[in-house]
Length: 99
Image 1: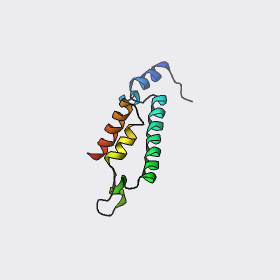
Image 2: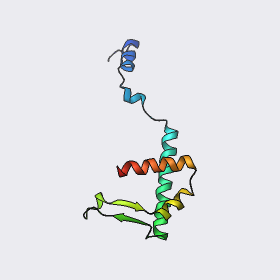
Image 3: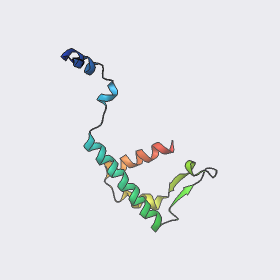
Image 4: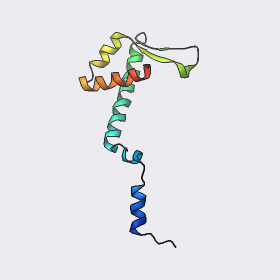
């Protein structure tokens, strides 16, 4: 049986990678993902109600390369349901995928 001393524990903690320090707060992570899931749920309902406003634009037939296109009317409907800071977050999130 191996004897674990305080020194070996301290060395392990000192050698921890900086990525471990960047672990997000679980509450914030859950809130963010719940928010994004709610947005996708709302978007799917809008797509059913206004199929001409929200559609997939294919880039050559491969569905994994297709992009979701939202016209200005659908964007205005979505924006009306979110606070300014939440909408800004969504716009930044969506625009990151367009780049």
